[in-house]
Image (tube, rainbow, N blue to C red; front, side):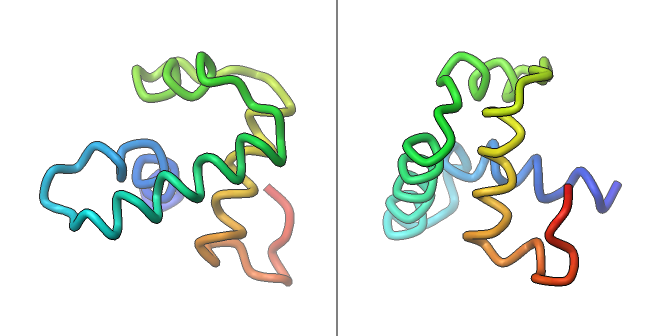
Amino acid sequence: MFKTLPIVLALFLPYISCISDEMKELAAQLHNACVAETGATEDAITNARAGTFADDDNFKCYFKCLFDQMAIVGKTLNKL
């Protein structure tokens, strides 16, 4: 369960209504930066929110980018 928690948070954080506008803005900035860095498609990200995860390297790199930016993956655990 704890391995999937960061994925769930990364996908749904922008849609949680009880977070502040600043947190929503930060989540959008992280999303935009990681999409630009990795080339992940919005379709792959939207499908993941619905539970369908693409076996796509760009999509995987998108999550690694989010994890790196949120300091979820440490320097010694830099492999997903």
